[in-house]
Image (cartoon, rainbow, N blue to C red; front, side):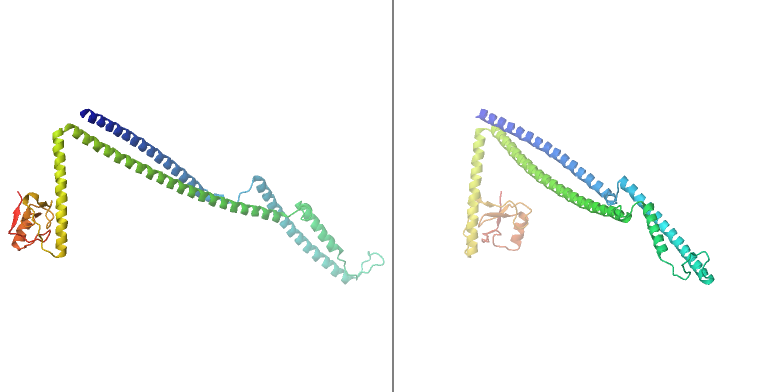
Amino acid sequence: MSDNNSDAVRELRRALYEQQRTIFILRSQVIDQRAVVLQNLTRIESIEGYMTNNRGERFRPRFSPIAGVELGQLGRRLEMRERRRQNQADGTGNNAAGSSAIGRNEREDGPSSDSAPGTSGNLPPTPLSSRTTATSVQQNDTLGDGQGTSQNGPGPSGILEAHMNRARVRMVRDEMVHRALQQQIEHQHQYLLQQQQREQAARQQHIREQLDEADQLHEQILEAENDENQDPAEQQQQQQRQIMQQQLYERNVRLQLREGRRFSSGAASSLVVPPAQLYWERECLICTELPANFYNRGCGHVCLCSACAVNCVLHKIATCILCRAPVNGTYAFVR
């Protein structure tokens, strides 16, 4: 018998060691997973910080070096063209003033002697000179600019507007990409957090189960060691005492239920329990602080301490506190 108990103790100890080893392994895995979670969170925060810091620079219109040079040349050409037009306008105004003065002098002096025969000095001036001047101005502008509207495609303003449109499209596209990336990062962040929380909860539950099993194994080992150290006679006596206590408890419960039914129906109490089979309460029912050591001689309920029993006698309480049965005489002390 002792050999079997020793083998059982060894098996239980071996199982306990295995459970402890499993718990250590699971704890190390949980620590590794926490480190991975911290790394992922740090990476996500660094990406969000980079996006937040570079958000202002992303929406600035940026052009390639070739486009920048071309825009600079277009700006200089536009300035030169405006200056040339202003100079030509000033020269045309001076020519018009001079021709008007010459015509006025001719009308005053009469026809010139140098004019060809058959021509009259009073004829109106033809607009050929003005048309020729406008044509020459347009040709000079075209040759000076080097980019005619009808010959070489759109003008400088159209090219600049096209570049600005492309810059706006690029800004909108960058904004959409930024929003999509931010939503993806937030979704991934939430998914990782939820997954880590689920895994951590599952591991903690598994660890709690393993700890409970280890505690049960430890208790079984202690019980087995106690059983091994006890003699068979003592074990038998202990089992008999447990059986007697269980029977006494069941009998007292049945008596209490019967008294409760009789009291609820209004009948008088007829329970008389000998002192050897008293219904024992662990603490006083009145003060619930001191241990109960006085019982009623009529029903046998041990439910009062010494102080509360004296108060009941002084106040002439003639019924049991527990079952309301009449008190036969006084309360007795349990020795």
